[in-house]
Length: 354
Image (cartoon, rainbow, N blue to C red):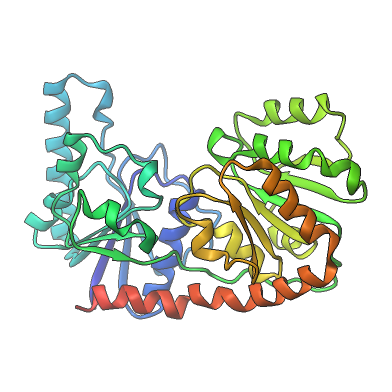
């Protein structure tokens, strides 16, 4: 039985990286692989809000964060981490490593005779690539990216690139919930998610569609800024901020439209999740992410990035037409099969079993 090691910076129990790792780990143990998740920098060992299979082992290395050290001390500390990690690999007879952290160079694992995959969880523009960081990325057998549209950009700095989208694990379908005149947006309250430009786009619609509501779900540093923008325009009844819920399925099931306003995305699972409930989606057509999921005028609408008037018009087009929402929603529900466990794991197993 092959032993597969996932390395991650911090195992904090929530977050997009952990969600991807959990989905992959569960799928692999169900296919009779031995899977270990190793956290490098834990504050403490925490459980995950995601349903991690009990057969998956979870360990931590207790590495030190070298960023606060002088160059000499940082180099010594990193060397100690390498020794501890090498011992862990040998004691556990690892054969494949899938990296979701940037602390350990892929070349370290290659020199320890491991098949090495670096998994990039976001788009090219999300990362910064100084010369030192580029050198630090060399050595992986495979570099896994999310979108074929970025292949040429990644090929400037890396080789052995494979495109594998994130896997969609179906959410629990809920019964007896009626669709309402609700548009849902979900994400962290930070600059990148673009909720300010979403609110500005939606403001003119509050008068034309007073019986509709935009619900923005999340947490983050920009919460107060968003609330101030809403209150200063007197649209608290039409635009609502909500904290995350454990019943996200009910939010999707009761929504008529899902909207994404981000400036950067890798592979926004919120769109796939919404579509699985038959909800058509609208998004700014940023470099990657939405256009890998939304098929224009089939399961949703894409608008030019930064064009807030176009976003307003796209939302209005769907708000006016129940028939269009139904048609797109039905196609949306079918279209998520492209990201099913069977399809995505077939791509991963071609690497793992090679």
